[in-house]
Length: 226
Image (cartoon, rainbow, N blue to C red; front, top):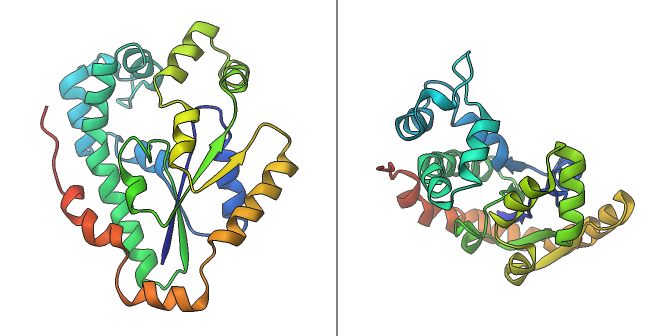
């Protein structure tokens, strides 16, 4: 089974490309969705977050106040790293479980959509890495328009991530999302044609579990300590 890593930056259009992939009935593991699920009330990551950030970052119903937490972590790299230590092991565990499921069910190819694919080191276990790219100026424009936030806040959030100019250095394929959706979709079709496994390569990779599954078993079970 081929594992295709998909990543990008804030307001780069990664979610748009993910939806295009899902419409093609290609299995996709949504890292953003998993990140939201592991911090639901009562989950271990939720408890770790409260332990460090206190209950002041909760809404009245006990759920995380994402806007308040975002203001904290985007203003302070140390706090951002602590949040990642609270959540990443549990996100990896869920990714691991889904990969095993797709492998057992005989899928030829699975896309892992992960915003921190490169920063977390997960890119090392991918068959191919696809980066969605736009210029920082376009990122800034789209983010301000989408989230209705001040320019300084948008810049702060963009600079909290690895620059897209750096991410493309790790890419096997780059999709430039600066134009319209039709052009983005055309580029996606080209990439998918290149990464789609042949029957022979699928048989070879299905004989044993993906490298990520074999090697990731150790990392996913580690519980963070703060």
